Image 1 (cartoon, rainbow, N blue to C red):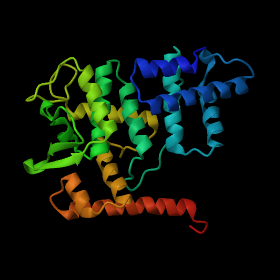
Image 2 (cartoon, one colour):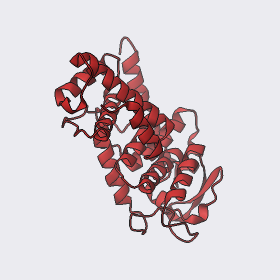
Image 3 (cartoon, helix red, strand yellow):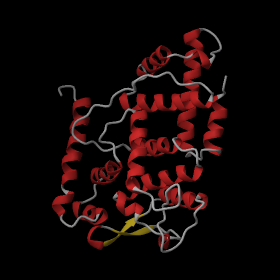
Image 4 (cartoon, helix red, strand yellow):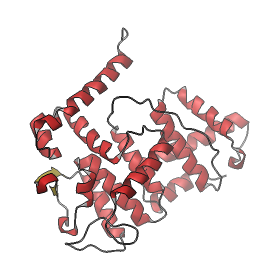
Length: 288
């Protein structure tokens, strides 16, 4: 049987996952092994695992109060652990996340989505590339075209990034340390090198990275995580805006960070934030 610590070492050393992801995935693997030990009444053999066992595991985790999104992430981590152990994961449908008004992706979900996308690549540099792109969308609020339009001229990176958006308007956005580290990790691993006048993010054959490639990767990852079809690369930009608004950012500042030509384009996020507040109210208020 594969030791969860061996999988954690693989994720950290070979897959270059973040420390947060490694801790979370290792904890999931340890929970699965512990559950199976009780469920089967002895030292578990992962090759015996069936869909019914995974459903029982998720039901057991439900007793801890986790929701659909967390259960879907748990299932995604279990599948990765089983694959590493040389076991074909049983086919089963993951928990469905309720659809409706577009909701912001939580910070944990944004990072988990990027890591899940990266898990789908065997090439470490491609995995690092996709993490860097998706964190740019969530951490800096870039449009996907803006992220893929960056060239090597942005290097070396500082605390801010100059971005050229619609109508060739340039704006300055803050660059979080985690986002900067992800980009630098990609630059270090890419086999194509970096030139000031060429795209920073390259496709597998060295050409400019296509937005369709990023969208396809996100589609696969969100299915594994059980996230809504509305969880797209652009949804990460929506989440950036909604979270800033929820933390007290004013609309004018948000307008500048997003590169909106008019304030009316930015005001849509007040409705999204209000929808999130209504969710909190319904879940918390005894009379809701």
